[in-house]
Image (cartoon, rainbow over all chains, first blue to last red; front, side, top):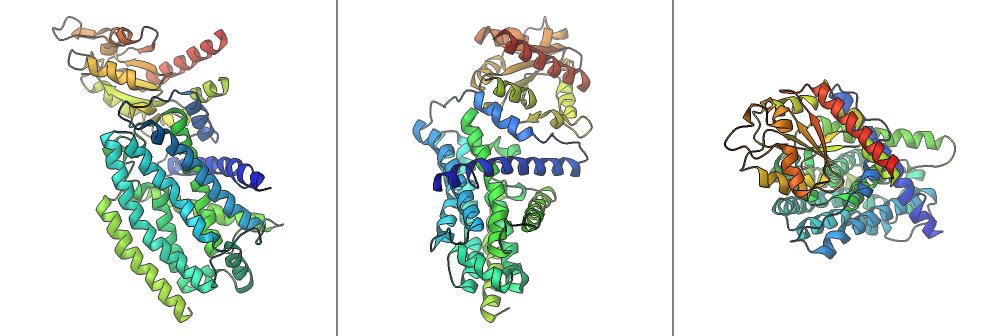
Length: 306
Length: 150
Ligand code: SF4
């Protein structure tokens, strides 16, 4: 059962397919915003299929083991996160105490693997990208944890199942002042985790070539693309689970769930299309000052009962 | 294999290599990527790293300085990788062909390092974006032949 959850539904296969479709949605909306036609729906599948037949040259200066291991670990970690979130949503009892913390660690793994892989590649531009990714990572984790703490203190438990049950009984956390603020903070932090535009500083095509992914090609790059796609699917589910009562897979609940999901994806896409890229110091200041203060306000409001 | 090849036909990532052109061809290439022509419809995307490239868009007559760099870039690209010689300069040398610093044209420079390279010629000075799209379509047809032969 656990293997089915991990490999097929709601883990790897399901998350990859939905994630690639979502990435297409993102590209299509971007194209429409720029008054273009945009790619067809199977575009991202074609990209990944193509990457699988390309050769994977490893640079002479690279540390071969870490260079090739990093994408694999990142991919399996993201699939694990998708499986855990999905399982918790399908059955509130299919969880264990403290799985929110575990999930948080697992969600951090892809970023760490990107940093490791880029540093192992031996390319100077990649290492600049890796250092930026690291700075940004340190930046957004702090407000994200405080926003999660808001939810945890309100519910009084660090289990995903408990959080979902609490919201089913007392109404979603989003419908309170502290909930809205914490949710906004979480959305912006996840935007940075996904590396979408105002925070795509590590990949910055115009300055760094492809930054952290510079030396990757073929299947290794495909694994990173899939990781990004699965994270793009996981992030909205993560926010919905924490703040908006999760996904009910019964009857009309499915339609409502899809609506919530599309809403969050549209939010990510809109933020990405209406903002220019920040500098790394601006991004870190944004997270450590503005977002952390907002998150603390949410925490205080929550403890006052709002 | 064939799944990958049909993926390749739908998703060609291009990398722009300017080998001493007069920049007019480069401007036409950039034109190709603007909303008016929008080649992302066909999955063609400009990438920033040569490792991601499926096609090199080479412009210019390839002088002595740039020739080793072009060859190095071609060797670094992950195969299969198609080379597009864009513009009369890249195809034949154009009016620079008797120039003292001429080391190209593109096909000769590439074939020195890989005799089996697939090279697509798009003549014109500069070629229209439509001509480049037609070149891409022909290259895709060539990939089809490749599959049929196997
Ligand atoms: S083909 Fe013509 S437009 Fe293109 S680089 Fe040569 S001279 Fe310039």
